[in-house]
Length: 241
Ligand code: SAH
Image 1 (cartoon, rainbow, N blue to C red):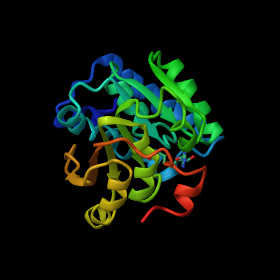
Image 2 (cartoon, protein in one colour):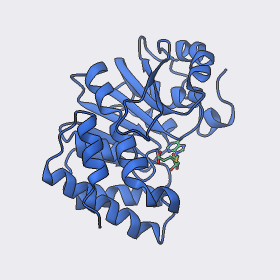
Image 3 (cartoon, helix red, strand yellow):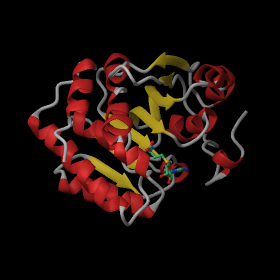
Image 4 (cartoon, rainbow, N blue to C red):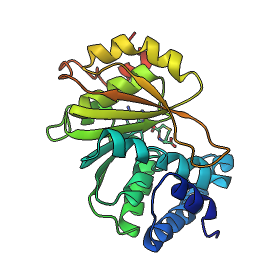
């Protein structure tokens, strides 16, 4: 196993200090990810090969923005967490946060539960449910300071699944690809319908030279109408326009 030099250097560039305990947690996280991935499809072999960069550091690029946009954040929800990116990686780096990981695929949720417990992380909840259902539960709807979601689909889908979970004044931070600006412009109206402000695209802070990306930041300004999110599967099947 590597000693996570890439992660340590990248975190440093992001202004994040990682203790030996945290580096050790990231190490066992990657070890278990490789182990579980032999039996369960959690990540692609290529991504696993570069997991330090494409999974761990990529998750941590949200931290400077979280510190800037939600400096007093206590509760974070990650929707469609998969193998824990960015939600579980953020929890390791920011242990003071209460983190809820929403992951509908049972095997992946099992992995997340197993990780939270073996890494000794307190204050992590793993919900093996769809975000559409979670957003209707008391204690979860409009209950989060920060929502994240990576690689779950187009921005309007992300908005419908996450804005109902954000408190008014809370913020969505979604890692996006190359067409982020176009997407953000065309999702402005959908965001407004859901109680969100205009999506602002920020360049992801460079953790190292080879990394680039962008993050869509959306502030929740008013209550999300009760009819959103629509029932299970509809937000993905018929994204709001
Ligand atoms: N965020 C992770 C995983 C991306 S794959 C990463 O970037 O690596 C998308 C994941 O979202 C899948 O694991 C899928 O099961 C989950 N997912 C998709 N739609 C969902 C929904 N409506 N509710 C909960 N989980 C969902």
